[in-house]
Structures are given as structure tokens and as C-alpha cells.
Image: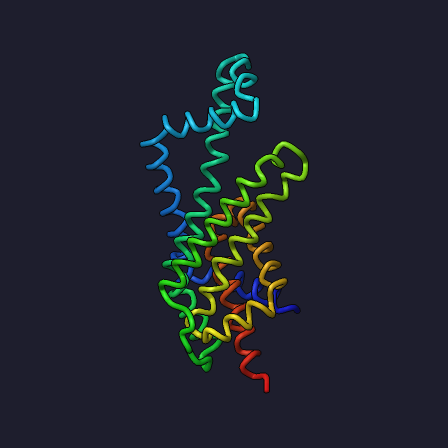
Length: 238
């Protein structure tokens, strides 16, 4: 089995352990409550932004002309939800990367990599900068590719964006405690395709009902197993 699929299978194995279930649920619950509160408070502003966006792409007049009116209203609510769900998942991923990953790393390292020396090549500042950069590029991907949403190729955008965000967010966190700075650079450089592949596989779980509730922590676990496994192999090389 390739290291990428091995890491994912180990992540699934770990996911439903009792002590990980709480870590798996609180980021998505926190993100959902956060955006629910923001959505209620700023509903009018968001509605105006959405109307402007629909007008820009030329379908607002069509929606307003639909009869009966409750159908048009339902479409507009659905459009709000389409924006709400990605915001919740991205926020949950960020919460997981910033706050849940240290707990997950400790659990995985103590059980599967107890002899792996910690060299602390990462830092809190580096983690924060990496997270901000990942979110910025993620937003750029969505904005730049927005015209493609109107054609068939647009269907791949969410998967490409999810793959990028997952591998960028979690590859740093997975290695920050155990790898030196030089080891982190070497591992990322040598495993680019596998990191993107793992980012895509974990990103796909965000689109599977029920499983998507656990997707942020599942992604974190997969990258921890992959990163620490690759680091252990690197240190065994002559």
C-alpha cells in the first residue's frame, strides 16, 4: 500500500476512537455556530451581496420572475446555504489546524512513533502565517475561477480548492513538532504529488454526507500519519 493510502486508512482507524471523537466534532460544531450567529446578525448585508452577485451573472431577474414567489424565495435561501456550507468547512479546517492538531499529533506520536525525536522545526508564528497564506490562495482560486462556474469545467473547482487548502494547511502542522526546518523543506519538496493526492482524497470527504462532519479531523490525522511516517523513513536513510 502506498504511504498516501496507508495514512488515510490509519486516519479512518483512529477517527472513531472515543478520545478522538470529541476532537473530531467540536471544530465543525464551533464553526457552524459561529457562522449561524454571523448569518443571523448580518443577514441583510449578506442578502444584498448575494443579490448583487446574482445580478452580475444575470440570473437575479429570472429568479424574481419565478411564480409562485415561494419558489423564488426557496432558491434564494438555497443560494445562502450554498455559501454558508463552504464557510463552515473552511472555518472548521482552520480551527482544526490551529487548535486541534497538537492534541492529534500527541495521540498519534505517542502510540505509533514513540521513538521519533522532536526537533521543533515549526513555530506558532509559522503556523499562523501558513494558515493565512493558505486561506488567501484558497480565496484567490475561488475568485479567479468564478467565471468557470457557469460551464461544465466549473464542477472541478471545489475539489481543486479543497485539495490545495488541505495539503497546505496540514502538511506544516503535521511536521512542525517533530521535523527540523531542513527536514520539513526536504519532505515537502520530495512528496509534492503525494501531498496533493492526500489533499484531494481528504477533500473529497467534505462532500460526503455525515462523513463530512468528521472531515477536518480526518484530514489532520491523515497528514499526521503521512508526515511522521515519511519523516521516520527519512531519518532511517544513510
